[in-house]
Image (cartoon, rainbow, N blue to C red; front, side, top):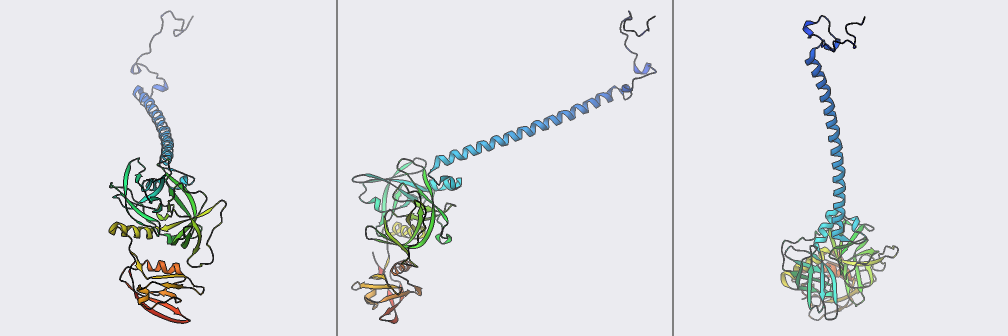
Length: 391
């Protein structure tokens, strides 16, 4: 005979009595139905929280990776938009952005050809420094900024003896260059040449090796440039002039557009200071301190005013500046200096050669009185000279 709970019982399924009416309970029922439900809920909540944290971690990681990729791509895009040239990748993004805004393209419509050169913004009101030689006989001058805006420019003034000019555009709030100190550099330091090209608004950048400051450059047209910065380049700037700067973006010099015939340092006039690099050549720049001094004078007065002594000199074998001739009624003649005298000091500053004398005189203005020490036929002497305006 089958047992009452046999599944084949014809009576069908009989539900169990409520817990309170039964003498026996299953162990799983001992904590009650609500306790069982809470345990299940706790397990479910913990599993859900763990899953949520895992999803959040994955999402954050993916977002960071995506942002990094986007940021990297954006920086590369910005770099490409503002700079080209073999050294563009060596400068920080913020430096490139600043330099590309301060270094401008100058298009000069001449009587025969159109010339493109480079200038550097020195005042937010539109004053630009550049080389003077390319401006000769210009019929029109156009300055183009990195953002594509173009302005007609006028010549404020030039210094033909040093190949320096100031031009001006009608604008305001422009980005200007930050001046650096060439004295902070040592021979062999890496510097950068920043220029513009004929067909591209972007800045062109190439690295160079700092060679020396205080160099005298005798150019192919018979002129001499003094206190120049020499740097060795492996890539030639695409325009007649360019800007020399440090990796931080500080501008230390403005390249001349003139071609060098020879060069020598002030300290050792007989030994060229040259660093030899494969396929390299030397380019020369005026120090930014000198060109901004000239620019300030031009902007204030329309001309360059220099203290004049009134002599022609050459390098003396024994050291110093040997006077070759003295101009009539010049400060030198009035002070008693004569041909054959060898100037050895100016205001206690040693004069080692004729170029050193030119640079020393730059520190003074018209009507300044200076003490000059000199040697005449083996005897040391001194005199006081009152300088006048060479202009």
